[in-house]
Image (cartoon, rainbow, N blue to C red):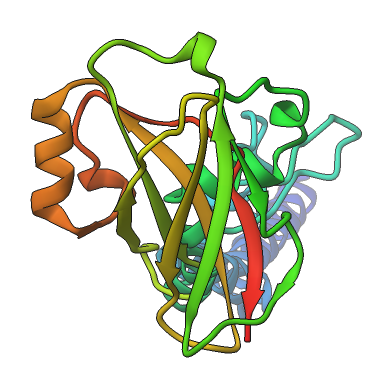
Length: 245
């Protein structure tokens, strides 16, 4: 009986030692590559964040897809939502090119009056009868004898009228004062006008200074840009665009 009990104790002891050995092996076995994979994933996300890509909805530090609204127009989220993509701003070089190309028209009220269809049916107080808008004009050393008329019924007491020419090649466009108009009783006038360079286009039109003070300011300037035109001065004829040769 004693021998039987002793044998059972030996068996139990061996089982106990086997369990201890198995546990020891389990907790001290070689590590798999999973831990390294997790470490690499964290480093990858951290690198994305440092490069500013995580903010674009590509990844975050918790390795969970972003669920907030993506406002980066250069990287719209592909989730079926409507995203308006705005063209990136022009570079400084492109902006300068666009400005140079459009500045002349922007700063030229006369060019706007001529080119804009909104003014096609405008009733002008003065007209240039020669040269007609668009004509090729032969000049004598740049001088052209221009004539036109003013509606005397729309003349304003105390105003002074001048004929000017405007360059189409300068930026901003320069306006050159030519002659103060002397009207005949029927409102017709004539003026000898000097164009600066042959082979170029010029705008020609009549301006009105509302009183002697505005007229004197114009006379003192002689040449000026649109931004320098004194208060009380307006364009009263449709500008004519002509190539002078």
